[in-house]
Length: 427
Image 1 (tube, rainbow, N blue to C red):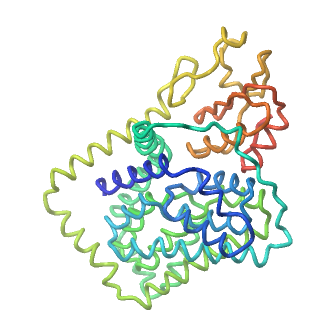
Image 2: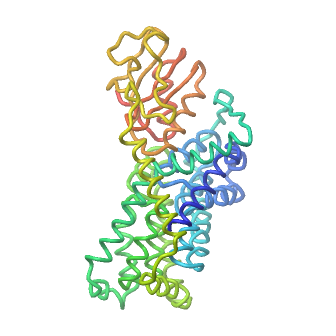
């Protein structure tokens, strides 16, 4: 799996560095099927996890994307991505690698169009928020390559590395500890096994890539290919956090339509795979992989595995262990404003870890933000605050869940901007 993971991370980084961010906002306005289709097509290749997609979709919604397009993006994006598609091919074969993005596309179209048809009364009249205040990057080609590598092998690995490791550990535990006879109980009832997996997959957090080894382990224990697809679809597409945020920002009716499209789509595709398609399409690759486990692995695979391990250790160390001089964890080290630059007299020069929102005489506000769990969350919060008139600079620190905002701006405006994309400002 490691060579494909490294390739997938690299492609994700190149997309992040070279595809303009406003491209994802330009074609998502209006309550039409075209906006839903655009959102789904844009969402399928983007490597966002199910926590990172929430603030991204809320930001698009706030800036003028229709509710149907936002839901379509929410459904399609976390299920797949260039990294997970490549990793799916490596472990589960070509049929799964083709059906997985197709299922994400279809369920996104159904969910978004259902919202357009049945949730019109709840549709808000949105005013597009201009992004003129957001910082504009002007990078050279090599600067973008550097940005792509940093995003791919630092930021993305910080975001999904722990979930990828957790998925591999869970897969190993299933393989070793669960007896083969356990899943034999469901061999004669595909629908029952599908419902059982749904009951566990819907509330859990699973990233698109981390769910792959778990699905493989379940299939090796006897569960059907359709049931494995349910895990690959429902696990990444929805979790408890996304349920709460969607209900809060878009309302209960939108939430019901969102869940209904994911669950019904997963069940429909699972039954279609198990009853309409040849089983050997999905099992032959696993059998070949099982036999190859007894062969000596190639040196290239060993080298890729070692490289992936080093990159994971580096990313997780940078996120959870390394600290700058003032306790910051930003990628550029300590970027907080020093005592000399702003005249702060607090014991912590930058106040990054203050429990309460506070304001200094130099027009600096430090506050805590609830709900951030990845670098995509951090970026969306920074962009939302940066667009507020009067903001001169903003630095969001993910591990300490704090934001340092400089400029002439009041706390109420910051709270409104942050809550509009699904996060909370602590008092």
